[in-house]
Amino acid sequence: MSFPWAEHYTPKHPVMQWMDEKLPLPRLVYNAVGAGYPVPRNLNYFWNFGVLAGLALVIQIVTGIIMAMHYGANDLVAFATVEQTMRDVNSGWLMRYAHANGASFFFIVVYLHIFRGLFYGSYKAPREMVWLLGLVIFLLMMATAFMGYVLPWGQMSYWGAKVITGLFGAIPVVGEPIQTWLLGGFAPGNASLNRFFSLHFLLPFVIAGVIILHIWALHIPGSSNPTGVEVKGPQDTVPFHPYYTAKDGFGAGVFLILFSIMLFYAPNYLGHPDNYIEANPLSTPAHIVPEWYFWPFYAILRAFTVDFFFVPAKLLGVLAMFASILLLFFLPWLDNSPVRSGNYRPVFKKFFLILVIDVLILGYCGGAPAEEPYVMISQVAAAYYFAHFLIILPLISRFEKPLPLPGSITESVLHRHSIKGEQDALPGMGADPQPSNAG
Amino acid sequence: MASVEHSDGQTLSGGEEVRRRDFINIAAVSFAGIGAVAVVVPLIDQMNPSADVLALASTEVDLSAIQPGQAIKTTFRSQPLFVRHLTPKEIAEADKVDPSTLRDPQTLEERTVDGKKQWLVTMGVCTHLGCVPLGAGEGENKGEYGGYFCPCHGSSYDTAARIRKGPAPKNLEVPEFAFTSDTAILVG
Image 1 (tube, each protein chain N blue to C red):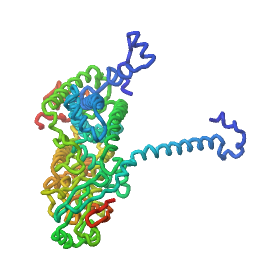
Image 2 (spheres, each protein chain N blue to C red):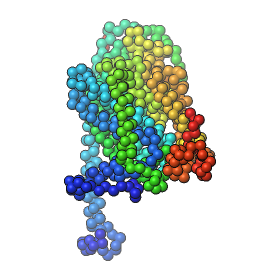
Image 3 (cartoon, rainbow over the protein chains, first blue to last red):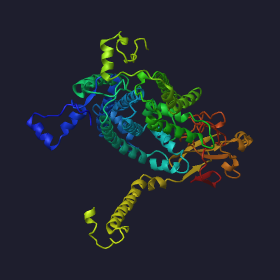
């Protein structure tokens, strides 16, 4: 693990020396997120989001455990106990709003973290396992968020549970027994609510476990960096502490400011008014939408309106939605370009931008009602999403001529900071990755 | 391993024979594996509907108050059930359609009881993803085919509750039911 020039943990205080012999936990921390972990010196702010996602998980676990102290997982009282938390429990409103908005912020930072990885090629060798574990975390997060949204037992909770478990009902033959098994009944009810509560409590700790594996897998090759050029020597790195603890600390400050603005001034902005109506199995809300972080996938689900080759539209939609995520597990082998960073891949860079816009369009359509023109737009956007990963990316990696890479991280850093305007002076330096006139 | 090879001293002649130790090892691990699988069965089965959920399996509905053109919503197995009294015009509209042109070909006769064609009893559960379609309540949107309209993903059902447009794959499900008198049915 890590580089040979990493600083060594040498406890000076006798208590710490004693501790190091019995249980070297401080040593582990020192080597993982302390001065013992050398990190490329050129990381930009896009590298903050991993730590921010960890911070968001901590906020969710703390506020969640507190909420569980005031919640009754029974369909007769669930809605009332959530309202009681909001109105009667001391600071209960703060815990619940922090938990609900914390989920959104968790997804915001995770999406930025994922797109950082997509742009800078963080999924490529030797970091494939980091990427795969990250996707596992993402799937666990989606399951956790879905089940958490059911717990207040409002209208959106109930109908969200019905629609999402209905996805499994699309599977031929075994679908309906699976759906009944998941719900513990023919429709969402007390049994469903109880098991969702149990699993919603469990999964965050599973996520924490997979995060440890994610970081473990990351620390074997070490972090990537904006040039995508591997670390070549001690001059290319700085110790994680104090350099990146300080930078991540600043990022955490910005994150918490934005989080507080949302929490205190627009706590219900990302929620749905219908979820303040208690669940009613006899009345579907006029417009069922999942939470915003599921919208792109929801748009892909709804994009299929006609049967193809005897496969029902419903099953196609479900398969496409799951495929849109499972596809990402194959990404390290779909993109064969040896150049990691999008900064040195002119064609990739353009298509990456189109992909980002495409996902934003999908997101917008997923939140819109199921009518034209949104259905047609989601069909085009969903088709493009799959084309990007399955056709465009493999073709780019085959035909694109990448820009010359800097010789090392240090070279790129010194080049940018000390010899601006003398690009031609150093042979083999290549083009500036970020020309000043680029948008 | 080599040091324990001679310990049973019986079957060393061929060298290819199954050693006693290997046999015991495989047998023990297999037995533990079967035991583990047997334990998993109740762990999974406990998530299936419990006896009290299954007990609520039939519903009686009184039809006497439902006028032609009206529909009521009730529940069957904790899911919505639509009981609709069709008007002659709605029956004619449903009969006019050639079933072979439908996504889920069925005639109104096949979906109702003989001689009581005006009583359309269906689950109020959209076959797409399980929302409750509109159209049973007074003044609700019945969709462009005059039956039911699902607001979630825009599936439209006709006056025989057959799927005509949108993502739903099947007609609204007709549960098993029987007339217990002229004005009452027992569903389930």
